[in-house]
Every structure is written in structure tokens, then in C-alpha cells.
Image (cartoon, rainbow, N blue to C red; front, side):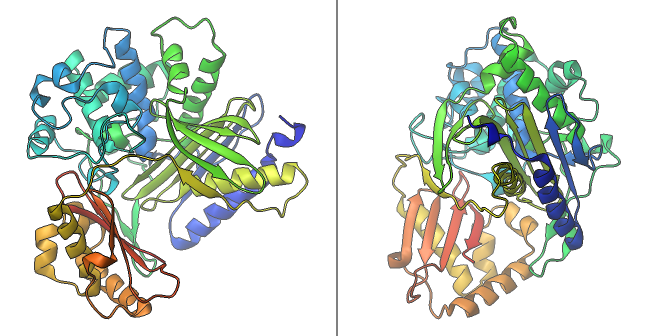
Length: 463
């Protein structure tokens, strides 16, 4: 590693100050912290609690790791661990597959992010309605909240304790995370989360309470507490004599890469991304090993990242829906590295290659649902929306705003007729991309995502 690999703290701080100012101008707020090991901390709004969204998965993985010491077999099927899951499509999947995003169940953020307070028996009943996977288990990386929700069900079945109490007692408590929890009513000073409308206006986001989907993203915390959490992971990597089954031993193991995600390259560096247990590991040609995780939720966006070879960690928490905190951290780190090597004006443009996943073929019903949803962009129809939309859709964007957004995009892209199957490419059984015909660069696209019951959970338009 070159001596100039350690990012310049001043440049990183300046980058984050700029991001915070931009969000403040919009009406939101940013909390951030840079924690050099053995050096002074740089931070802003470090004591204000935010929902940390999918960064929660690192706490879920820690709790599951502690149960392994009590006899949990990570390779045992869910249907055997929780008999109520027998007969469902996820019954033959395992804790290890769920931890590493290898169950083959699809990315389900928009729907799952709205389902936190669902009860375990409600989720099991939902699965019994015929939830489908998009790929065989263990054939590739497929980010799925569903697997982490089932991990919580397993933890409760094995311990007889609620998942939130288990994590609070066995993880938060021992590490002194006194400003970290699951119930927003315990945090009267919680940074309010906002939805951003079509014209950039902010609207209060609905708060959800603890339930079966809390393991995917229910934790509320502060920059200071996440700084302690990141430090605990750095310390765990140094603790070579940690007792098997202890929290440091579990945290060290969770940082080991286990499932290839993708590779990223630029003219100046290369990164390989690998998912571990509730954490993502990167091998970065500039810094060596990097460990991180992002989070996105209605009203919030977050990212934490630490550099074991440098003894450095950084976290960003924002309070708008799916705030791009990973981008903010990445920009800050890139700026810090560029300054450290004496090229402060250097920018890094990444190209990404994802690890292949052999997904199942889409069935006619799935194809027709995707096509019908895409055609709402060509001509909005409330009756069709009522039939197709998952419950998250009108919560994520009021129907009037969605109709207006589609109308503006349709005019800008000169969409004049309904889409046909000839315009559609099914990326997986639950995701399709329509390319608007007649556009010179073929860049105008409508992407439709379905949840596991083939309900529409997202309709995204290209820029």
C-alpha cells in the first residue's frame, strides 16, 4: 500500500460539509462522522438519532452469530427451524443463505420497507400465498430483505424472546450503545424523515413500529453510537484471542467476504465487492480491505464504512427517502484520496460489472403484469393501478403525483403509444425493463419491479 493511501481528513470533511449544506438547502439534515483511530473525531449532528435502515442488517447478523454459540446450525433449513414455515417456498433455504443474500429471493426494498410492523404469523401467511423466488438458492448474490425477516423469526423461535429485545440485550447493551434502539417512541428527538415530491418539496414520512421486518432496517441510532459500532468491528479484527462465540469473535467473522457481488473499475483504482454476514467487504486497490453497508428507508438514507488497514471509519445519515448516503461517503473518500496523492481535482468515474445470477425464466402472468404496469406510464388508469399495485405504491408516492410524473416524462420522451412485448426485456421473473421505441440512443426506459407475490412494488423511469 502506498504511503499516500490514507485519505486527507480535511478534504473528506469539506466534501461532507458540502453535502450537508445541499441537503439543508432542500430542507433536510445530514449527520456525519469521521473517526480516525487514535485521532480526533470530525462530526456534525453526531448525537441526533436517525433511522439507519439496512445498516440494521449488521446488528441482525451479530445476533444470529451469537445464537450459533448456543447451537444454531446455519445450514439447517428454515422449515426445520420454524415448523410453521414448512410448505412455503422459503422452507428449504438456510440462515447462511439468508445472511449472505443467497436465498434466490429478489430485491424487495419498496415493499419490505413498508412492512416493518407486520406480525410473524402474518408474514408466514403471506408466504403461504405462493411467494416465488427469482433464482435457485446459492447461485449468486440477490439482495433480499425477506431472508433477514425470516432470520428474525428464527431467532424468536429459538430463544422465546422478541427479536428487538434479543438484539438490545445481547448487542446494544454490551457495547454501550445507549442511543440505539428499535422503537421511535423512545427517541423524541428523532430527526424527522421526509419524502421528496416531484418538485423537490418535503413531506413528513410515516413512521413505522417494531415488527417482523425490524431485522431488515428497524434500528434507530446516532453517528456517535455507530462510531462505537464501527470501532467494535475494527477491534474485533485485532482480537486474535477472542473466545469462540463471543461478540468480538462474531463481529470478526461477519466481516469475511462470502458471496461475490460485483467489481468496479476506474482509470485510477479497482474494487471487488463481496457480501459477508450483514456486511459488505470491498477489496480496494487504494486502501486494501474496506467494510461497509448502506441503508435506505422511507424518510432516511445511511451508509457506514471502515478501513481496517487504515484504522479509519466514516458514517453518514440523512433524512430524506433513500438519501444517497453511499454516494456521499464515496465522494468524500475519493476526494480525500485525491487530495492525499496531490491531485485534488482528480475525479473517479466507475464502471461496474455485476456477478452473474442464473435467474428463472419469467412466466406469462409475470410478463403481462410488468407490461401492464409499464403502460401506466403511457396512459394512467386508476382501475389498473388498483388491481396491480402493492400496498407500498401509494404510500411511496401519492397517486396524483405519480400520474403527473408519468405525464411529464411521457411528454419529454415523446411516448405516443402503448408498449408491447417487443419493447420488454424481463431481467428476472419479477423485474422487467421496457425500452421506449424510436429514441435514438435507446436510453429511455421504464423499469418495473414486482414483489414475491407478483404485485407491482416499483415503477422507475430513466432520467
